[in-house]
Length: 159
Image (tube, rainbow, N blue to C red; front, side):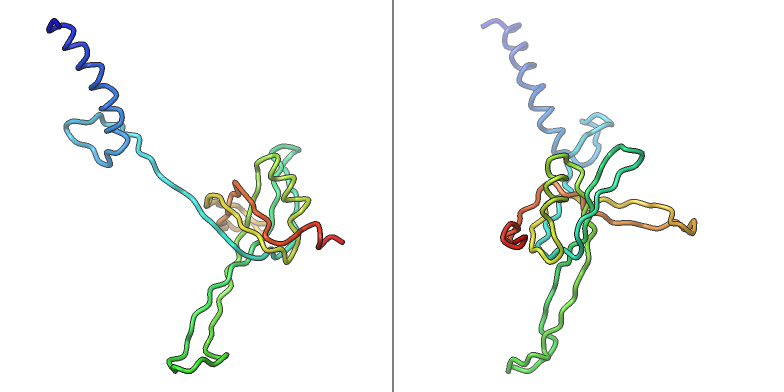
């Protein structure tokens, strides 16, 4: 092989390696370009009970969304005795606001998610701000659902 062919092959291999390397670089150095796109992750998994029947909302006929609340529970022993007693258990309930934007999933959620149903929700967390009726700025945390798995038989409960 000529030196020209070796040089060209080496350059062809170097470019993809640099691209792969840049995906994992988390800081700037003298060897990287100033703009490095790094991967990140925003995922949440919830398993709980629905607190209210879903509502469908849309602004000016656009961007319909199905919204419902989901309760998750956390339990722990609060007593120090070795013998189990019912009063030793403490429980905390956390309420989550779930929004479903995906067209197919949004319609299924609106039709089949019912108060009291046990469901599993996968998605991402979104933090936002809005102004209420009294013109007060409020913070809002929402779970944007990508997937919902029904753990109770929705069709049997409808009967």
